[in-house]
Image (cartoon, rainbow, N blue to C red):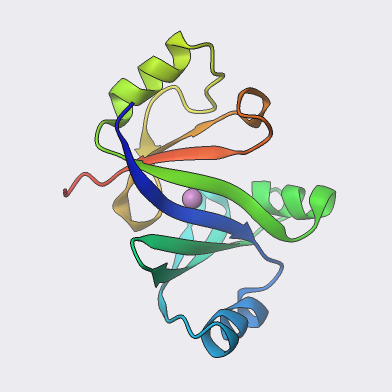
Length: 136
Ligand code: CO
């Protein structure tokens, strides 16, 4: 594996409008980007803290995975994302180790990153994202 650090934590929220002021005013972080990821049916808001980001996720449709997550579990931590230097090789290695992949090949996520998810069934319940910055 080629993991370097925690790239971000994904947090499911009902409303960015409610959540962003908490992160900005109470925690003192700055929201530097709000972006809709159409094929994921989410709107995201990003905050930087050290080398790690917080990614807030709001559903844009009832079919959104985030809407389903909140319906089942309520708001809260949705996934952990590790930065990797070689996503394709890491996915192959995960598969060799019997980890169930949600994405067998990288796809485009927020911020132009190449991303892929590992199934929480294989990761002790933690939805896990691997991401590689193609510009680094
Ligand atoms: Co993410």
